Length: 445
Image 1: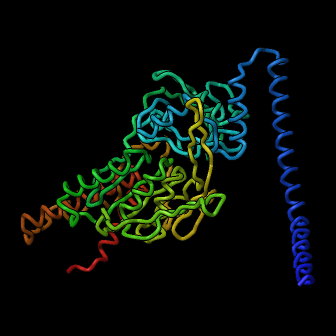
Image 2: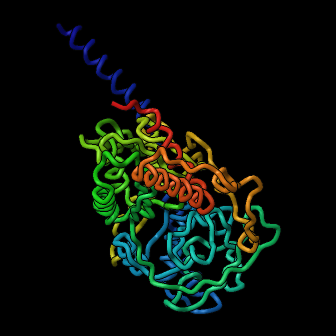
Image 3: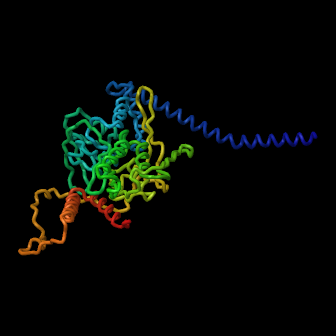
């Protein structure tokens, strides 16, 4: 018995020694890391005090600390940043759909400000700013070397004031200046209309109004057309939509999906991930859908396009999207400020991360650039455009009833309207043609 107790004690001691041998170095490493962090914080404190005491001009301590915090966050990625109390308040206003500015969503690339997309109907859009443009100067001052927040601050100003931005655009040999008058930006999240037998849902942003606007607008167009049976399909236009609220992107996707995953997010830790699924109900009642995207479609737009594409609920047409596949969480801070921090990546239902890759369309259709002199060209009738009816003494067609003639004339008017749309918006016309083709293949019962 005594020997057994000694053996047990020996085993316990061996276990303690082994545990100590393993845990000891780990604890030492953690202690070293903590010590290093405290040393770096001490260094920060030393630099802060030297700036306050020895900088050539007196500096405001609060502004210095805010700049340090912002520098820490912006060093992580282009979307993490510090929001001062004023910036945080402005962000809250923007998600409600009305704010002052130029009307562009921007990011930073290679030190310059890059336009993600202009917002429909805003001063920047009307001035001709395009997705993919690089802004190099504001009122003659270079933005190179500035943080994104600093560059954006340069572009802010009173409503009604003028700003001159210098743009570098792919395909243009020289930079050029664009004059813009700042205005109050009132966002209409969704604009709806009917082109022929197709309902077009133009979603410009994902804010608090988006899903409500979409549901009401679709219902209105369908009722005006005489019911869903009179509609051949729906175009969801997400071009130049810079994104917005994740919750709204999920609701818009869910509007056209009966079941299945919409999007998932994966953070640093496995337990931080989330998965969002569709609920029963399809506002389009199974009608075919075409989604339009381009290089200005980002973030929430890519969630919608990716979800509908992966579930084969829609055909995606246009050009590759922007490729912003990260999720930012806005965290309130003391003093009414906030911190925007990238906390996760999002994935489409098939498991694709589109970060930096974007959503690739099923059918690539580029929007032709309109030539500057196109409006000055005189229209000339095409050779061979004369028909049988133009010939002297041609026979009349008396085999058709008055109603049949009216139907032919209505169909011809639709075809001419489609041709006019092709000149105005080639990508949209292409999307509508796809829906016409799909409906032509549906057997008549």
